[in-house]
Amino acid sequence: MNTQLIADAVRNSRAEGEASVWDRLFAFWFRRLVYTQIWEDPEADLAALRLPVGSTIVTISSGGCNALSYLTAQPAQVYAVDLNEAHLSLLKLKLAGLRACSNYAEFWQFFGEAASPSNSDLYRERLWLLLDADARAYWDKRNLIGRPRHAYFTDGFYRHGMLGRFIGLAHLLAKFARIDLAALLTGKPDAPERIQALDRLHRLFHSPLARLITGTPALLFSLGIPPQQRALLGGGAPLNEVLHQRLLRLINGHPNENNYFAWQALHRGYPGPGDSCLPPYLQRSQFGRMRDGAGLIIPVHANLRLFLESLPAREVDAVVLLDSQDWMSPEEIGALWNAIDRTGTDHVRVIFRTAGAESPLESAELAPLRQIWVRDEERSADGFEQDRSGIYGGFHCYIRR
Image (cartoon, rainbow, N blue to C red; front, side, top):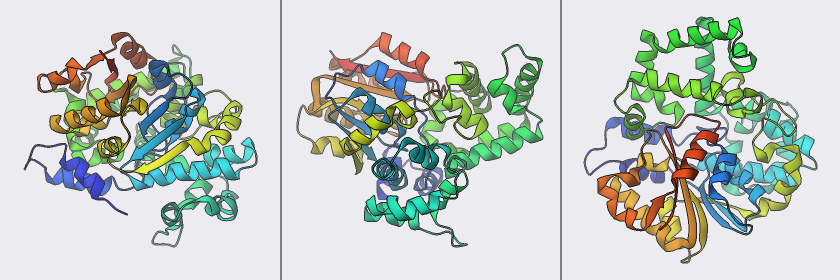
């Protein structure tokens, strides 16, 4: 797998000569499958973007969940750009599944439940035929005991990936601390067992073990947090306290019966099939639209700025940056927004998250960008409140002045 794009991105997060051994270790680590699902709420995204039908969207792909879910806005096309070939291989597999699965039940079995032994046959007999050479090579690759990666979908796909394994470790720690995760997920707010579980959760996050885990940069790599972003996440506060507050927002900020992010964190899977408590692309009512629109999704392995620079001027109606700017130096952020300025239409919208609360565009170093771009305070505040994942410190929506 080509890791140079990831290495370049991590290098660009620092001034010349400042890259540390932790940066280099993260670049090596992040070439793997990190996210089995994306942790930004696509419904909050679309509410902030308010896109007209026929829009062109450029988004960072990650696991591809949101790129597919944006099809509910009836775009003309969605460019899903990523540095990580593992994440792009996951998106390509989902696109193959939409083309190969004859009905919603099959698609749900493979990508929603993602734990059926028969998924191995479905992959080999139908999905494999629709993959390109890079994606085939990724999913066919075997581990040391000869097990191919596509077998992840036979025993619980969402338990795999770096984040999935990290969550599995967290569940073991919770079991050791006698934290009732089911009570946190489905218990009534005033139920004694839930109050007790929250108290034990507080004690765990403020234990010496939690301080050790959050104090070592490499132990947070499985959360997809590079060293540069780790500093922004803390904002001067102890990371164990920050992560505890973010987890409380995740499990208490929205009703869990409709918060699939909470289900992934506390149950390690989705509660479907159906139309509730699922990302849009996995909902039964959206399956036809997903199948019909699969050809509108264009996976791209590239640096996002360089990809935007390759597009015609005034081509793009929306850009979704996820939290990528937390990785970047001010110079790289400035170059990225110059590319968006050239490529975006007059009414282009840009959204992104940040580990901390503040937008990088509001810094003194990037003041020139504010002559072109203005933060939409209302959409930004609404996006932050609506984002059910609750793990970010800020949600930001920018439009042209």
